Amino acid sequence: MKPLLEVRELTVAYKVRDTMKYAVKNVSFTLGEDEVLAIVGESGSGKSTIALSIIGALPENAVVVRGKILFKGVDLLRLRPSERRDINGKEISIIYQDPIAHLNPLRKVKLIFKDLFEDHGVEFNIQKVLELLRKLKVPDPQRVLESYPFQLSGGMAQRVFIALALVLNPKLLIADEPTSALDLTIQAQVVRLLREVRESFRISMIIITHDIGVATSIADRVLVMCDGELVEEGSPEEILLRPKSKYTANLVNSTKTLYEGVMSWVY
Image (cartoon, rainbow, N blue to C red; front, side):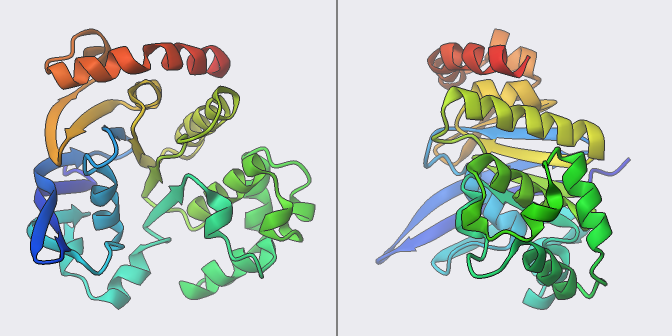
């Protein structure tokens, strides 16, 4: 069976004044149907650049030097902007660490959903939205739909953002640093929510995170990035118990206490 997503020798650089700073160097990996893949590494390791390359949201000073990103056999890097817009939100969705910052503060939640449907030429179905919010355990979803984003708590906004990402039934969900800068209790809630999404929606997922503990608690397979390069790949058990590289071993040791704290809340 062909993978849902295949990244081949991806190399991305940023133009900084008169120099080129390479953020991703010759990275290759695959993602299967219904598989959860975590890409973990420190800030600057290149993991978020990979996510932005997949959704076509690299900044203007970024250059894809070489490589392919095949989604269902189609090279995303060769698509026109209009073709990208058709895929993003409908076939591939992304959720961010700070959902409120990415929701239009001047639009009620109901209208944000309506805008998404209309942007993709799909008739707005409020009953589908309400059903999805209930499935994501949003209390009083009708009230939430009539609220503005700034009226929602952080946890509620995260669930609304996930609902936006899922409502058009995408094949791939990318979560970019979903637990960064959160305390243990909220981290545990986000981890639990992503696990529930995985189990309920049978969707392929890529988790971008600096926390190897969070990565191994969700993913089927973990990629470890360092300085733009893929240094290790393996199952959560292999990464946690039998790391092959010194860099991975240091990541495991540095996050062991935090991981144990998060998982004590998850379970």
